Length: 85
Image (cartoon, rainbow, N blue to C red; front, side, top):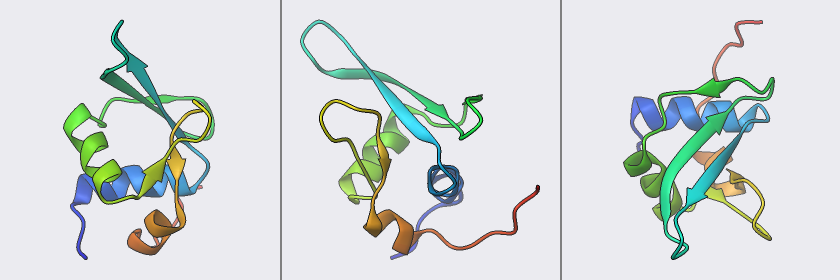
């Protein structure tokens, strides 16, 4: 299964230890997402539609109301990249 460049970027960030916080409204629906890398910096390139797409593909998951992390399926989808460090 091919994934887009934006999905690839987010999954790679999650594979390196990042997480996604889902902000909910009063009814419990997700209205906004915030993506953080492993250093705690917030990324602006994770819109709600991309978050939903990754959830549909079962590439990310949240357990016990914690932030969303990458799943084993997500690790299979992500292609390796050279680290800039």
